[in-house]
Amino acid sequence: MAARPFPLLVALTFGLAVLVRWWVLDRWYADVPLINPGTVNDNQYYHLSANLLADGHGFANPFEYAVTGELVPTAAHPPGFTVYLSIWSIFGADTVTWHRFAGGLISATVVIPVGLLVRRISNIPAAALAMLAVALYPPLWMNDALILSESMYIPIAAWALFFAHRVHEEPSIRRILELTVVLALGALTRSEPFLMFFVLLTPLVMLHPRLEWRDRLTRTALAAGLAMLILAPWVGRNVTIFEEPTYLAVGPGYVLEIGNCDETYSGEFLGYWFDECGTAWPEGADESGIGAAKYANARGYIGDHLTEVPKVVAARVGRLLGVYRPLQGIDFDVFFERRVRSHATVGLWAHYAAMIAAVPGAILWRRRTTLLPVASVAAVSVFTAAITFGISRYRIGADLVFVMLSAVAAHALLVVLWRQLLSQLDRYGPALFRSTAAEEEVVDA
Image 1 (tube, rainbow, N blue to C red):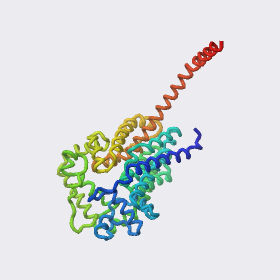
Image 2: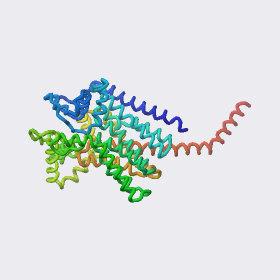
Image 3: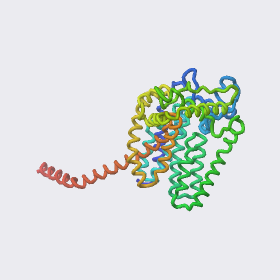
Image 4: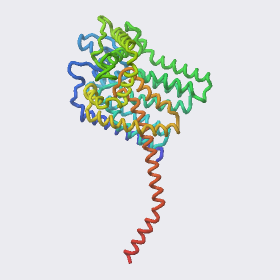
């Protein structure tokens, strides 16, 4: 296959990915409300905060605004996904349905960096198979209807993989800074890209065999400087307006508290989260003060139950990977995440298949290039669950890695089968044709 049709191939698979996601949203989620009555959640936060931003109110707490009408500053999450949704809202697409479509569109763009990366590592047929796989793979589109930042993190992780491999091939300052920009912008969307500065970019540069130690330190310092420059406006805003030190978000305290309590250290919710564990609500404190109190509460509980932590971490990772209480995980996805049961079930089985096939895919990948980028992205997903709680959408980075590596393995298998078929045709084809010709002669006679 020539290189010229590749852009068309990318466009077609991108169109397919959008079609799949939008069809799912229209078919199953058109009439599903954003939240359960009487509750608040991240879905509602992103939707409402985006509309407040589009209306010129800045980054304001949507729940406080709904109750009191006051514009109270918020940093419950990094701003990236809110900014993206607000662009849709500015142009009038400000409903729940439109924001769901927005999530599906940004999620579908994952086919572009995946195609570019796999073509770079392997060839165009393998890239086509990988793009088709990420377009159709259920775990990569199941979050889009929820209006969550995972939809935006999927292409960010894929672009990080692409630029990381460019750095591995040639560790120039330009390529390192390109990867830095992707990770910094990603850190303004979710916490995982921020962690990748330490588990991906830094070791990629500091351990590169073609760089002298002085060059390694210089390039790493330049990357750190650029990252701080990109993050400075948001971090500066947070440090200035909140009572407690706040950098990318105040969310960690909220997350840690509901993941570290009696209910999540044993029993039905072992390794999961339990909303009623969120008891720290200091009176008169702002978001950062509440977050700090919750962080202290969680830290205190962990310190008092250190002997139970290994068991809890194992349960969290087991839930993340679908090997601990998987059927309960489906029930939780349906009840808490509000997914369609058939989607959660198919997604779990697809995850099993991709995770298993990723093993030979990783072996093949290692023969062509380094495993550090894909291992880092997957490891960050596991680490995130290990320190918080095990829910399937925290696996999204690992899901991307699994399905991409499984596509590489599938392509290699198809090549082997094709070659065997051609070999059999070469071996038995002439005899078959001679036999057919002889039969025709008999018939003619």
